[in-house]
Every structure is written in structure tokens, then in C-alpha cells.
Length: 435
Image 1 (cartoon, rainbow, N blue to C red):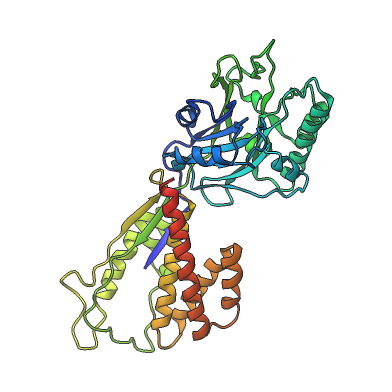
Image 2: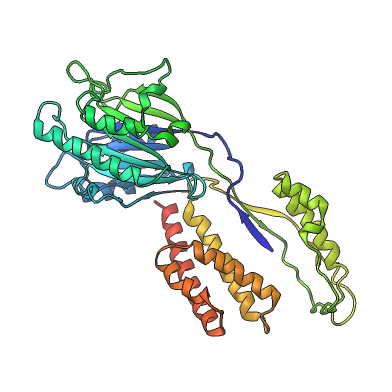
């Protein structure tokens, strides 16, 4: 028996840092070192000037971090956005497609990127929009209108995602007073300016230090994200006379992912089949076990289950006589095999590998059964639950195979399909470890 449990109480510090930095060109010396040093958890990066070659070169320099780039900059453009993160700070971080078609224009211009941060299950994640408005928009009408359209497009896309925690941040190249109608759209939707969470109240200090200074690097939280917000501060950027970094503090506990497994039973002979009158004990009949589950003590409940299993196994006679006891056989043990993410190599791919491995074992068990009875029905139900949660090509192909009665032919197809998917995800997880 084995099981995974992925939404336990957070491990480590629940406070995370999201920083917003105008890097003024990744090609410049010392940029990768600066970002690696200052990316405590997550970093929204603007003005990367990164073409396709620069993006690939930058990725190869990273060890404990990973980065998601927007579209490569073309024709020596002064655009470019990216999202950098420490691998151990999330199960996974993914670039997500836009819902509103209006955003595609700005994504193609290398001025917009949308990512989703997973620190537990999909139900508890954070969407981050990284935007970089055209410079000079405060004085040039066409650029100002472009930046305003960018803000409106992001707002339209974000409200279609429902009440998921969402943050819009970056170098707007506009102050809140330069775009009153667009800022008003966010305010009507109950978005708040991150500066309200300043150490001494609303912090309207300049983020661009050129000339007389202006607050053009901004961050907005929707209502759900504002509940997570705990702090706002301004830090010195890569150039002391240019842009300052936004330092946003959020409360987002990272869930522990546990994998439990009992010691494999090495019976020398087959167990005798129980009589028809035999009724297998159920968890609901064990009051001590139920109490531990109600208390949320999963470790204690699983350990108690192991002790109960030992007692049951020791009383099942073998076909050849005697009982399966001694020399380590018949013993069960609790092993907490994995806590994810334990280090920078862990991510959502690691978790999915284990889920696919579990499905492979279940399919092997079904293949070994001569008759599919009650135990097989339970195994098939678990497989259906797993497959129905899958998305993409794998889920689209696998779900019809389990929709009606499972046959031996369909079982063979599923074994091949799950095996191929396991290989693909395993290679992907391995490659992520060596990024």
C-alpha cells in the first residue's frame, strides 16, 4: 500500500518575496549574478533587451534558479520581460496562455508575460503579469496610448480568470496620474496599489531616479492577492541612479508533499482464500484510527494502520500451512520517502512522475489478476480519478479508455500510454534538475 499527501501544513517560512526589477539589459556585465543574488524567491524582470541568443545563454548560467522569458526582442529593441525564480521556492512556475486576445499583441512585442506560481495544488496558486510599457510615454502621446491599451488588455484578461490571486507588476513607464481611467478600472474591480503596504503607510517614493524622479515601477494586487500581501519596500537596483527595485512580501505557505509506503511483503507462499462469511475490517470500525485522521495526524494514522495490518497478516494461514511471520516477512513499516520540494531540484514534474509510477503499478496489478472483482473495482476507480485529473494530450487519449468497461485490450493500451508518459515526464524532470 502507498499513498501521497500533498496539501499538508506549509514547511519552512510562509513568507515569500516577489521583487520587480528593471535590469536595463541582460547583456551587460554582472546582470546574471545580480539577479541570482537578489532573487530570494521570485523576480519580475523588465527591459531585458534579450534576443533568442541572449535568452539561451542566460539560462545556461543558472544553477539554483530558473527563468521564463517572454518573446525574444527583435531588431535591437529595448523591450523584453522575464520571470526568474528559485527552484526550491515553488512546486512549479509555468507561463500561461492569455484568455483575452488583446494581450497577444503586447506579448508579441516582448512587453507582456503571464506566469502561474504553484506552491501547493492548482487551487492555491498565484498569477503574475509582468509588463514593460514603452519608455517616453509620459511625453509622447502615441506611446502613452499604447501603454494604456496594455493596462486595459491585462485588466480584461485578469478578470476572466475569476478570483484567483493575481498581481500585475513591472515598469509601467506611467505614473498612476498619467492613466487615471485605466487605474480607475482596477480600483473598481477592487484592486489595490501595493504601495499601500509600505512600512510606514502608503509609500509613494520614486522608483525611477532620473530627473526629478517618478513612481513608474508599480504593482497592483487583486482582492484575493491583497489578503496575502504583508509588505512593500524599495531597494537599490542594478544602477544606483536609475530604477529602484520593488520588494513585495507575501504570505503563501509551501505545502509539503509526502509519499508513504509500507515495506514490501515477501511471502514465500500464497495466502489461503478467506471464507465467504469473512468480513474484512474497515477503517471506520477502528475508533483510534478515525480519531487520528480527524485530528489531522496523518503520520500517526498511517503508523497505526501498519500495526493493525501486522496483526491481520500474522493470522492469515498460508496454502501450505503455517503463517507468514518471521525473517522480516509479515512486517509492515511506515516510511516517509519524500518531502517535496526538498531542494532546488524538486518541482511539479517530480510529483507527477510519482503519480504516473503509481498508475503503472496499479495497471500491473490489474494485469496479474485472473478475475476482476471487488479489489479490481477499487483499483480501477483510483485509476479513473487520476486520469480524469489529467489534462493535455495524455488525458485526452487516456480518459476514453476508462470511460466504459475496462477490457484486457484497453488495459494493454493504457499500460503502453502511461509508460510512455512516465518516460517523457521523467526526462523532463531530469533536464530541469540540470538547468
